[in-house]
Length: 115
Length: 112
Image (cartoon, rainbow over all chains, first blue to last red; front, side, top):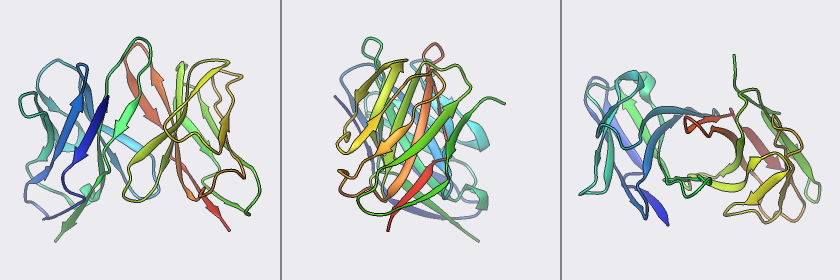
């Protein structure tokens, strides 16, 4: 079984300040972890993924995330927020068992960026 | 460019009617998925298919049906048995070698 908990449903930051979106996971197998971003009425775009290589993962648009097994966390960070970062962010876990591979989504964190 | 095309973008349905959402991919991916998105609930898996002519129920399959007659296509039918069909529906495909997922831009279904 696997699950994802996004600890904040809504985060508000000022433009130019750091962003922290928190995610905890549980998985019976070695997980792969993803962060996706969704702008209103759009599909999901992959920001970054962890698949058992380096624990610090760099993604697009200046985002990065650190896999911490001891804390079962995969928090998303960005040093300086931009207005265009305002969107909904999903933390996702998957664990392949045989040929099956299903994504389990967190409930999402809405990021608001203010001037 | 390779990708996933979902159509239509917006769809209105009267109560009691069946409606089919289209999902087409030209990525040569074997696996395809349908998710439903409701506010504050993330995405939930409806059905998935790992190969042509085979598909499995996800977590919320009741009131939905799918087919996978071609590798490129994975249409979803929302039947009149689905009690609360108004939602945003996302289709995805997966590269089983690189394990990457690609999502379509979604269809917003509204029952009127």
